[in-house]
Image 1 (cartoon, one colour):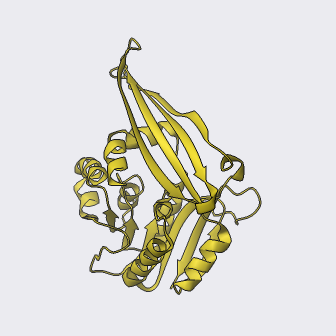
Image 2 (cartoon, rainbow, N blue to C red):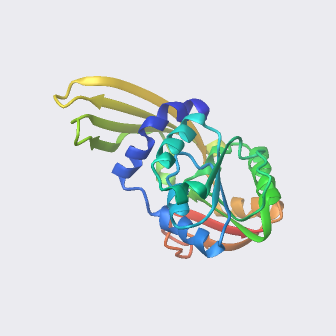
Length: 257
């Protein structure tokens, strides 16, 4: 994962802004405000969710495995007002084991972070670490995608995910993705490729990076959470807190311990 995010970090924020992926931010910020904080975000990355949370007046601690993603976050944080900077603290570490030395009213793992935990032992270690950091009455909230089984029967792509142009330089960045499913192991190999061209269309660079994601069923997540002593208090099928059901594309879970 460190190698994937080393390559992806410079593209990350601009890619997801261009792709318009932001529906999850109001949910996590709203939950943070409702909780009153402090918040622990596991897998905070470049701060796509963490920074809006801090801007909303909530103290938040972010943990991430990737020094490159955290470097991007620190660069962005340096441009924030002092009051926002004061609400943020960061740790580089593994979400399964990192000790922060504090308990939190809300612990989050946004944007599919749990899907990087490939083995059962990894998933259980993560949940045990969550329990160690939860304040009495606190909650864990995380999301994973609801599997679209039509995309899991064979290789897919390349698909054009992002096509953006820097208005200041005319530099064009295109990101494509290819997927290879392994249904026996509930895993999906994803290879991203970034092609950068100058304003004339001449190729400047081409870079690829691969990541493996674990997909989950609802029954599996319910079993896993119960096994680790959690009680599910919310199960949503969208970031608008709609009840999970037929046609849901996401699984967003709120659980207490």
